[in-house]
Length: 109
Length: 112
Image (cartoon, rainbow over all chains, first blue to last red; front, side, top):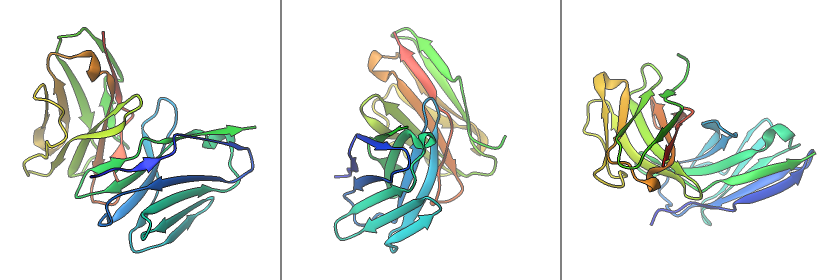
């Protein structure tokens, strides 16, 4: 079945790197996404990766995709307090996005 | 407007009442989606509209839920005879392609 799994919580110190992991089930997914949700706000697309790529870097964000293991990760370098939020991994199957339950990132000053 | 807007931002209703939630997508976006975000349940797909095609209703949890999209733009999600388990944040998104869905801020529905 369709299922995207993420750990629920991550706590890091300001300035350290954060790594948020996700596993997905459908190898035919064409795109995989990372969304950020700040308290009381909607979802903001952070980045996405096409399934034929294995890495994408965008400023402090690095996305790694291991298609063999169906594993996706988001690395945030030099994590700041403003990065505190819930991060959702999502895959696209046909049309609607299938989301994980989100990882709550807490940044300790 | 620059982004997807939703109204109301908050809605409190009594069990058994009907509610309507509105979504204004980004102008020109042909696709519109409704999702539900429940505490501890993550985001759940409800319904999808693409242009003039018949909507994909496969995610609607019961026949109390329905949605319309008039003129290929504004959409209304209607929940009839609300139940307490309908309490959630209802998120709308629109897109012009498959790469990116832009989300609105959501409507927080509380059923007492």
